[in-house]
Length: 265
Image 1 (cartoon, rainbow, N blue to C red):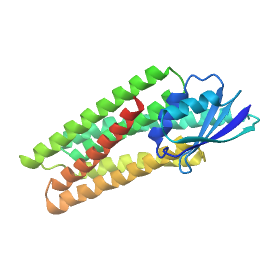
Image 2: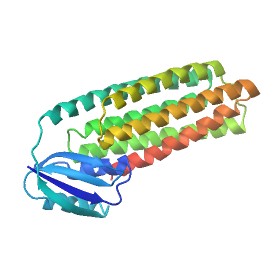
Image 3: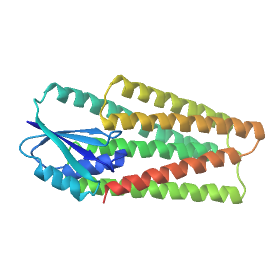
């Protein structure tokens, strides 16, 4: 077994990681991939030489350089660790999807664009976690099709959300129920804190797990933003704080959709 280390200068976010995984998918000599996004390095555990691996990486035009190859003894216990990571990711995915349903429903019922926008952010995270789990099996074509479908759907929802926010800015805007905004957001924050606890408990240094922790930490900040918006709605008796936080989150969701679409190219 060989371990080859590559320097990938333009790999700076989880989107590039997913594109690299797709590009290397199907090579029978590869046993596992280990990403270090902060240092822009990739370690590939494989059989045989690394020529085909390097060729595929170079086609991505991420400025890839092969640094070193050394003999490596593969530890089968790593498989157990990977299974544990999959379990955590599945748990986080299901929690995010459940709160997408809860927040979107309560957001429409209580007239809060902040809750609706936060629900789409939860859906966006579910898509990212789902794509990461999907990478375990399946063809490159199928993965790309799923990425495109998820990205376009997320982009459409973000666009419709921004249109609705603009319509409410320009027209008659109903007053959202601030206590519902705060209560549901507190529940969502609690769920995200639990997800972050699970991710940190894994003590994984793998890039996809580290990225998941960053996503979840950002979600907690967004939950806090919706709570603050709910308080401001009460203090000023105005719906505009809710619309502003909704607009901000919809923009973040659209940005996430663009990154997912890059995976489908």
